[in-house]
Image 1 (cartoon, rainbow, N blue to C red):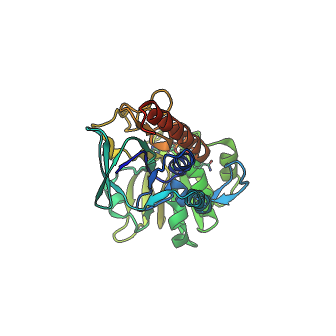
Image 2: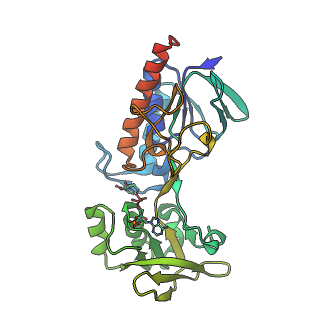
Image 3: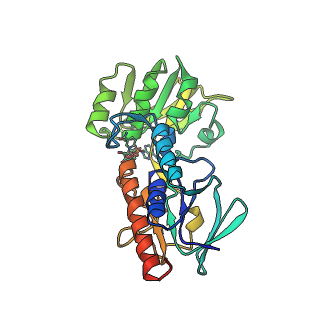
Length: 306
Ligand code: NAP
């Protein structure tokens, strides 16, 4: 049997594509991955998804899941091991099983970035974390440092200030790129100290993080900040390793799209953070998901496959 549509990924884009696909009679197979739900599973309160003045990220994704299930969407909770776009129908391997499909929507999202320091890698899970919401609880009454100047860094610093004894927020420039409301929240929080124009040059500690060495980019002075927690909030990279050499990607690895959700292969569409490095909002990802499903339906209809 050849599937009409396979959706890869289960953030807002993947679920929305699947929901539209089911309702359009495409009987899609949604491959959610082994950690379903996408980045919102690592967020606390979401306050900008219309219709939900404040909802926890995992609860919102739980609602997306229930919606997809209520429509009878077929779901697999395994990571996709391989995608073969060289012959048609395309092939997607997951759960050790190969599926053939006439169309694919890629909604595999993006993951947190790391600085790339040797000791940062060595101490991941031992005080170094890429997810304040997941790991913050382990730093109750401890001193922590957050690096970044975007909304994620503001959100993480604010979140950690409710748990930790103190939060130091370090940014490489003298202005944040975060939205004003989130900056204001951080700047008026007495538990958060901001260090401008500085970068982290080393993470210290033998078995656990005991401090972070930072360098001021203006004065070139280095100093050590004693902290037990070091949180990265410096952006994301797209999950596109499976598509390298098969689809056109941009310099940062994001899938290139044209005419909205079309990729460089006919019948393969991309939606959400895997192709959007600008907005990266749940509501926008959901919108992309619906667009990709409508585009997939048109493709299948034009090819007389539905
Ligand atoms: P981002 O907006 O790309 O910000 C990344 C930050 O990290 C920037 O301030 C950047 O500095 C800094 N940075 C990047 N690489 C660095 C490095 N190697 N060393 C030191 N600093 C580095 O990423 P984000 O904060 O994850 O946000 C991504 C998107 O998600 C945004 O559109 C944001 O609005 C959205 N978001 C929204 C919410 C919300 O509304 N609740 C929450 C989180 C994220 P520069 O500024 O100097 O480039």
